Image (cartoon, rainbow, N blue to C red; front, side, top):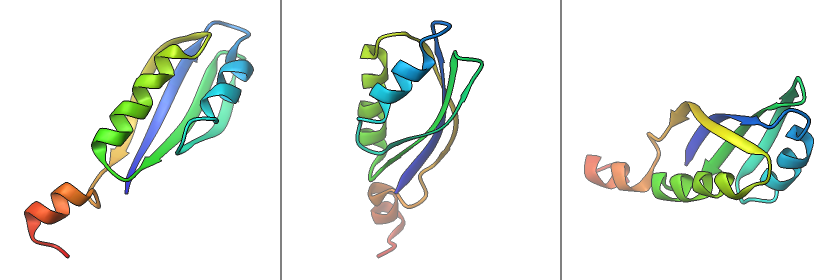
Length: 87
């Protein structure tokens, strides 16, 4: 499991609409909207590649200005488990 904490900056006043669209994406959970322009969310996927592909879709959401990866944990990512010989 890959878990990422992400901060999304939106056009002021469009955070609620952007958050509603973001939550429609698989693995996205919105935790907080701040000052009507900042969205704090987590993204959970199975692989790093899936995480990247989902986050790329954030760019297509109306009102999104910037995306910032704040935290990620990928120690359980299948590829790294396989390389390490962990079953």
